[in-house]
Amino acid sequence: QLYNAAFGLLLFAVLWAVRKRLRAPGALFWSFLLVFALARIPIDLTRAYETDSVLLRAGPVQVTESQLTSAALALFSALMLLRLRREATAASPF
Image 1 (cartoon, one colour):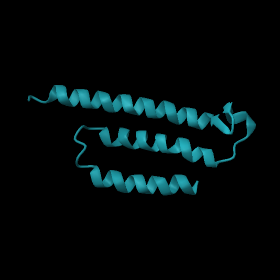
Image 2: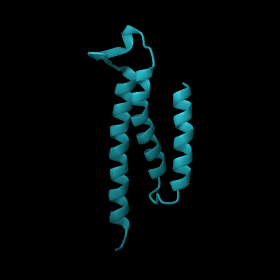
Image 3: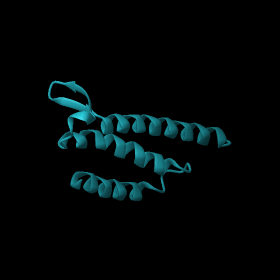
Image 4: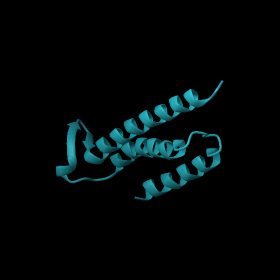
């Protein structure tokens, strides 16, 4: 939990610094979700899980439910950012 908290604070500081560069409404939110979901996947490798939550084992690497959920959230966030970018370019007159 300390790794998640530390990364969350670091991500907040970075996104706060670049918040004015993201012009499309919602881009900051989806950027946060994308980066946090991608960071959560390796951070979850440091945790010990019960055997019920492990979905796939590949040698020493175990894929858990939370990692799979984070991967799905990262994919959805990336798709939403692409959609926001496409709508922003379609709305601009130039």
